[in-house]
Image (cartoon, rainbow, N blue to C red):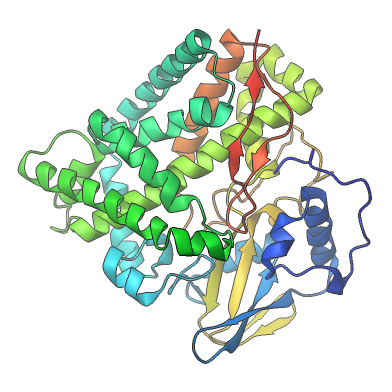
Length: 425
């Protein structure tokens, strides 16, 4: 999240001054939250936060906050000790939701996770990926053509959301006439993720996100049935077709994967693109460096944007057996939460971690996870999309820049940008 969001006077950070389990914490200005994570990284061991009791028994729940780079990597690379099931999001998905919609890959452990990831990995053939990379450049060109012709003022819907959405739909083989419906459902399904809604809104639109998710899965299931009968050279055809083990994704598995791809492939890239434009607009010396030699600095700019404005804030894990991590004893069944953005500002790993520096090298950020079996399958695709769009934008519109501050949606899950005004010559 942009470091341009500041307050006039920041209170001293003490143990009792903030609570990562309180939704109010995620509405604080970015600098106050950054100060809280700096304090947590300075402690001898991960701190435990108590969540509000939930359920009929009103049992106390909580989590150990993993905020250091080394701790996040350790938990990520030990899936036998830190399990993803029953869910990595906060709150965890209800059992009936998982039964109805299927388990997302991010919520699975081996052997189920390994089996599904193997099917998906085999579907990403070199031929498919080569075609997708060609389409990324063409889509970026069309988007900038439309920007020049129509002169929109909000970067998020006109630019940042368009590229990853169109790429995913084309890669999956979703017919263009269904795109507007899918885009509306994405907005409704993800609008309140990680956000505590007011009671008034919960009463007015109960289950809106779940209804949108059901519509998304219905659309992709219909396309999947068609591709089983008449396969084409798209990702859905590859996913529903039998792999070397004679197994393809079922309709429910396909729907769950598509929903994950839309969040992981559209929402995160959209937010990273928007934060990136704002960072390059508010750091003119870094912008000048990039424009002077794009081929030299574009990779570094993308990685620094991902580090500085890490798209996913947190995932949680469940401790599978008693563990000792960074001096803390973790009991079986306890929860740990991996804070990726905090790991990306760890002073033990990054020099001057709060600075935005596109020449930073090395840059072992954790925007795509801390390694291990859940490392993001779409990392390469996301980087290609960001590079293609920035290359097209800054080549053809070298004075493009954000205007004012981004409008952010308070969330403990992702760095979501609702809108970002922008302009060019």
